[in-house]
Length: 313
Image (cartoon, helix red, strand yellow):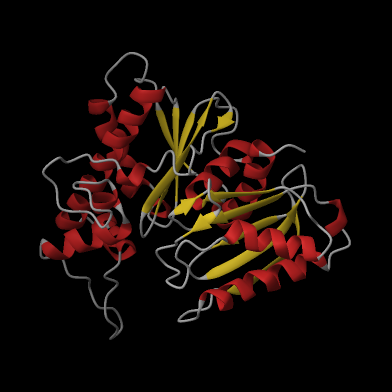
């Protein structure tokens, strides 16, 4: 059983040993609701899964959630789900499963770790014993595979590359640090920096222009110098963090997914250019950076993969 909890949707599926999914279902994440109302949407997803004839065949449950998470306590405090603060999601989901005759082991991981598990199992990191996988979107998150083992750390936050500092005198980050990758390379940061430098999106057909990172990417593709500089700045921050991670734990591939990664070479070209200047030691020179391949399926596939990698059968 796989459950993927995010700020806009809560999804579920039964995931087979080959990664195919059945009984997929989803509910919108309630907004402006109390904690139990959000949990009620999760319970509806569990109820849908329980209606499948394969329900009784499931042996584990993986929960992937927007963070912060604390896997050691089974709690979540997602930035984009304001009703949940230290919410005991593992305990509550386990109770729902037991009530429907499926008292199976359950594990909680952050969405970056889930994406990492998915890409290592079936995606771009498959076949790599040591990998860093990242999500570059509204925020920047990630996870690690070391020696072919998912490495979430004690609280489930290992590999959270978005809050590595790459600029010691950089601007304050929402996490309380300074000069974090997320404050330089997230979609929000890219759009904010471009606007601060005087970039404005072009209006089309009487409609306001796209001021998001996607709009900046479109301008960069058209040769706008400020937009190009915004992505070069983001790519440099990501390259520095990727090289630092590889130097620390000897990863040989970095897989990048998320909305900003969908900009393609507009993001990947500056990352690769700057990586050559940061990954200078002999054991990290061959580090490769590639796009993720599983897209929107990564959350559910990754929750199942994490359950397989972290729980006994």
